[in-house]
Image (cartoon, rainbow, N blue to C red; front, side):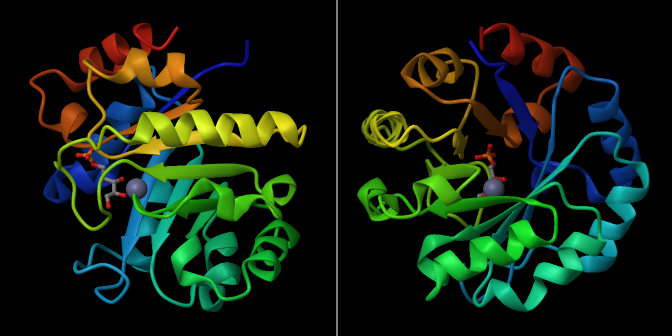
Amino acid sequence: MSKKLLAPSLLAADFGNLQRDIEMVNSSDADWFHIDVMDGVFVPNISFGMPVIQAIKKYAEKPMDVHLMIVDPDRYIDTFAELGTANLTVHYEACTHLHRTLQAIKSKGMKAGVALNPHTGVNLLEDVINDIDLVILMSVNPGFGGQKFIENTYNKINRLKELIITNNASTLIEIDGGVNANNAKALIDAGADVLVAGNFVFSSENPIETISNLKKRMF
Ligand code: DX5
Ligand code: ZN
């Protein structure tokens, strides 16, 4: 069985102590830095942009998993490659020419991801599944951390897993939103490969221990 990964979302970090929080993740059992970029158009919130990501990269010793919640993401593919992004995920709902976007991301040496809003069916990926390195299933409506997990996500994991197996693809399934110690194991058992956790990690008293406990539930 392949290794299961945990990606703390820096959206929930203390931006006044960003270096401290990044170093905490460096020294933890976490695998990736999940980085949420919001433009105030695709989602009703603005998070942070390039200068902040550049600062994150300076200290981050684990791969940057960038989740773009922006319209017209093609405009920034080169920039994210230059920033040292490992995985670049765009929203299905924001791409008119998704196949082209995926090829452009991969041509820059990054892994290409597609995120689906809670209402977007996984069947829409049928014709591109072999071109996708990872799918982010949104288990909350994107835009904010700290929301309640949407239970229908389990059905979507099952259907996506089936699609991946049928097509002999090696796409990873990543779950984003409302992940905590109560649902982590069930999500992995359902077929998830990567879990994002924001508030559950950063609002806890001992984030290092929270990460380590979450990881223990993922095997
Ligand atoms: C939501 C973001 C998530 C968010 C997760 O739009 O994509 O990555 O930071 O935060 P929690 O784990 O608090 O739901
Ligand atoms: Zn995210």
